Length: 281
Image (cartoon, rainbow, N blue to C red; front, side, top):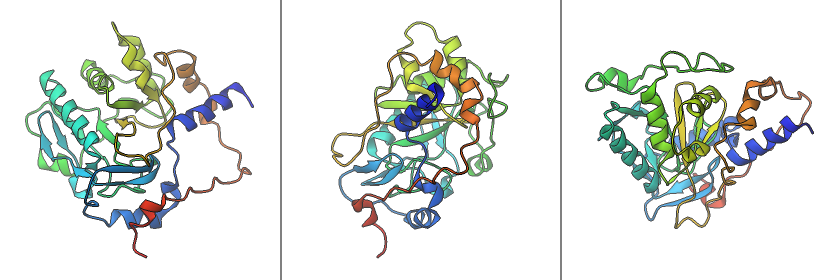
C-alpha cells in the first residue's frame, strides 16, 4: 500500500465521515419523520456516523451573535453540550463584532441517518456558514433559503478566493479554541489559508482538519460527552498543527483518484440496538 493510501486510510478512520446514511434512504426517511426528541436524560448512542441521540435539545432559532437558517428542515437539535457550544460561539462572534453567524444543520430530534450528510447522527455535529451577516437583521427570505457563498472556487482549488477574509479566519479560530470542540472540518484550501495567517499560539490549528467539500461552511464536531457510555469516540486528533505533509497530500492527485470499480462495496453498519428500537416495528 502506498504512503498516500495509508494516509487516506488513517484519515477515514480518524474522521469517520463516510456512513451508511448515504446508502440507506429508508432509515433517513424514518428518522426524518420524528418531530420530537426522546424524553429523558441526554445521551449519545453509537458513532458520529452511525447512531442516535436521546434527550436532545433544540437550539433557539435566534440568539446573541447567531441565527439558524432553513429552520423548516427541523435540523436544529443536538446534545445539550452542542447547543451550549453554539450559543457560546455566537456570544464570541457578537463580542468580536463579526456580524451574525449563520447556523445550518445540527441534527434531527432523535439523530439517526440524515439526508445529505455522512454524520450529524448523535447530536454532536453542526455546520456553520462562513458568510457572516453584517447588514442588519437577516431577512426572512435568507433565513428560509440561504444564499450559498463559496470561499473556494472548486473542489480542487489550492487557495481561497477574494471573499475570504479576517472575519472568516476569526470565526473558525473562535470555534477551534473552544475546549469542547474536538475537531473542525474545512476545505483543504481554507486549512492552508489558516496555516499561513495564524500567529501566536497555533495549537488550535490542529483541530482544523482538511476534508472534501466545505467550500461554504465548516463543520464543528464535539467528542463524546459525559453520561454517554454508549458513545463511541473517534481517534484523537494527531499532534501538531496539521500544516505540513499531511495537508500537502490534499494538493496532489491522490485524494481525488477514482476508486477501484471492482472493489467490494462497504457493508453498511448496523444501527445500535438502542437506536433501532426507536423505529416503528
